[in-house]
Image 1: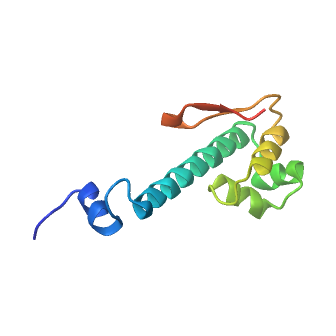
Image 2 (image 1 turned 90 degrees about the vertical axis):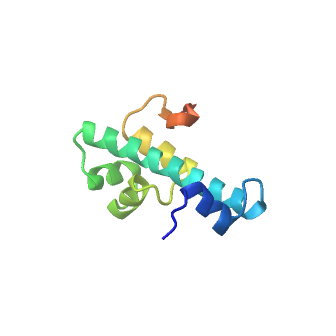
Length: 106
């Protein structure tokens, strides 16, 4: 059995870096990671404040299921981020997106 690296596998299955399909794939992965990091930041702050998802949802005006989706990096929009951080009492908010740096929300 021959082993190949992840990069070699991506080149074979998705195309070389710089091709439209590969670039679209890499962008989709980057966005998914960003959404995950945002959700984790919201979850960490909610837990730091000792709130349940249901309590945060009440403050945001959404159902617990929506809070769960946001915390899991799904259904994240600018308005949902703003609602979450304002509901958590943030007067200003910035997100640490790891390698991408920090982003000021308002």
